[in-house]
Every structure is written in C-alpha cells, then in structure tokens.
Length: 136
Picture 1 (cartoon, rainbow, N blue to C red):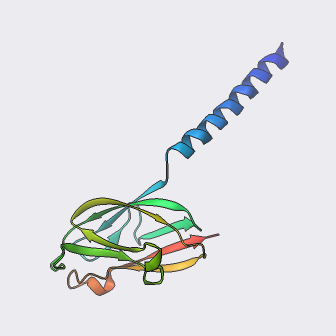
Picture 2 (cartoon, helix red, strand yellow; picture 1 turned 180 degrees about the vertical axis):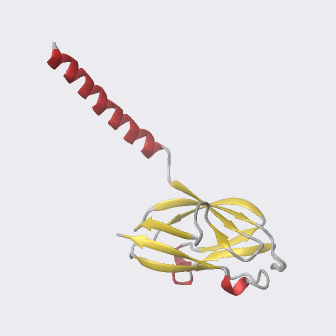
C-alpha cells in the first residue's frame, strides 16, 4: 500500500510540474517595468543602477512609463529608449508621456549594450543611459 501512495504522490508531482510549465509558456513573454523619468534617468524597480539582463534572442515586453522633462520633441516624444547598435532590430523606441508596452527580442550576440535617450529631454539628458546585458 505504501508504494501505491508513493506512486500517486509522484504522479501528482509530475502532473503539477507539467501543468506549471504549460501555464508558464502560455503566460507569454516576461514583462520588464522601466521608467523614463523627468529627472533624465532610466529607472527599474528595485535597482539603484538600472540594468536589464536578457538571454540571447529572448522575447520580452518592456512596459515603459515616460514622464516629461523640461524639453521634448515636436512629435510629442519626451524620451527614447535606444540602442544605437540595435536600431535595425527594433531597439529605437520613441516614448511619449504615459505608459506603453513594447515587445522586443534580445540580440543573438551576447554582450553589454548601452541604452540611451536620443530625445533632448532636459539638462541631464546626456547622462540618461542604462545597460542591457545579454547572456548566452
């Protein structure tokens, strides 16, 4: 009788692992919260120095909340979220005030990339940078 109970528990655990894996896959890409703030800084909740770490070719949703600084562009962009080396891969996001989701794919090449604001957004614009780290 003990073997039977043990087998049932083991079977239930395997079923739960399979179900959890299926539900995780159905949940879609990971969502990363970022703020492009009026003080000319990118911010990621829980981090003093903002940084994103992704696996090569990982698809994620960047949920970016943008706040207007002292300057902005004529098209209404108050910031951008740009990686110059990856512009052709969708990493050139013009940000208007408010929150918007952007689905992007990490580059295939592991390494460190610099994210910067290319919209003249205020006095501290030149310092508005953060890192994207891509792992294998």
